[in-house]
Length: 301
Length: 336
Image (cartoon, rainbow over all chains, first blue to last red; front, side, top):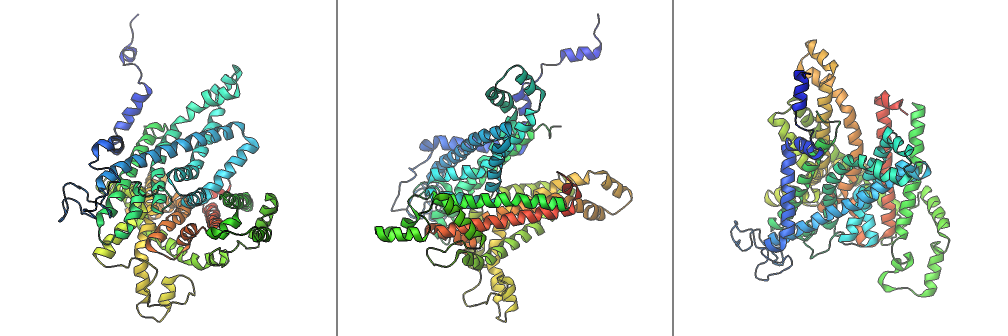
């Protein structure tokens, strides 16, 4: 029996791509997303290696070097590349240690809200009925209030501080995850494979967690990567308002709050922490956009 | 249309009660009882404590307290500020025009710049201009606006000395609030230079608050326009020999604006959030700054009432946008 050329070609084609290979093929062509990934990796590297990279301890004061300008400006010293702040702490070292806090905030907030949001959304979409209505109404209310306002009120009640700020931001972004999960669960629960699993005798827990949940992962991953940037931005805003991490913590938003009164005479204490926030948030947004394009089958081709 | 109206309105009522519930219980979560919080550091003796507890109705069961709270709210009574003893509603209403003026100007700035930028980017797709607009838009979307404000102050107030750093108008002017919008009031007044002073004070806050919405609107306009430009009726219009300007401006833009209207509605919450930061940076005497000050003074009635009122404002605007949207787009109205 001789195979036709078409069949022969089919047979000689390489094996089907693994999912992550396919993902990487789509992701790679998006130059912005790759740049975002690089910057994120760089920030992670700086954060992890901060104790070895930073020339000084983040809270080491030096009473001989108040408000030193960056090294390339007149009066600057190469020992303090980005200058010093009002009590002589090295800006570069503080920014490096600050990267740890910002990443920690981003990851922790997203972790809390993804876990709680997925659980609530999964239950709401699976159980339906009164529980669903109650949960979704609550989420609507949270979404109606201006996000920072609600976060501020929560922090005002719990008391200022890094942990409470993270909790507040997690509550504020929760509705996005609940909504996405619920919508995905409702769409998936009607599929044949779920019915088949139910016929095969799978219990509620098994249906929810091992059948439905894995198939809702893509939109959640996308939302989570975009959510890190929102979390960093919101937590920095709380820090700026004096409600987030407290001084002398080198959190970037808190550093900006400290620097506010020197805006007239020391541009560097104001400029660099904000630049760090902008670049990090921008990188996570680029990465998130790239993930969405690569993971969302509707936009493929 | 009536059916649509009734469904949307009926959704508002549970949201309203949910919000009062949230406002009521969040404040109850404050550690220590409210009387002790009121008394502050000085402390309070037991007899006076009991009297006050009764006076504020705090000896009642929680559910009864909530009932009393709701009936007060429905009568427009949101309590008094602990610090100034002024009614919360009155303080809010006195400061709200400043916030609205700022928010409206910011939205206008975002629309006037964002829509043309989005259209240009869509029409010149994949050109340098398109990439430029999208790049700037991404930066604007990622911008920590509290830092953006400080940078602009650094450049325009400190370096160039073009704009003032804080407030709504220079101190030598006293403008009687007629509309509450200082831009209009100062233009109507006969004080020389008052209008320019208020305009100069408004410029930087407007740019700062408008940056996030500008980025979102430019992005949204571009993608809506791209979608519309691929439609058959655009091809037909082109085939008829209409000028490119006419095709884009009349046939394209009208249809592309529908999703943009929705986005504008959604930006109201974003604007209030931004207003809190912007007002803090520029010492703008609005609702946002008032709320932040209430926190540092532990003025919980102000916090509770302010949150509820701002939430109601957002709810009202969302409802209005929903209704307008149903009005322009029949497909939405007839949906279940």
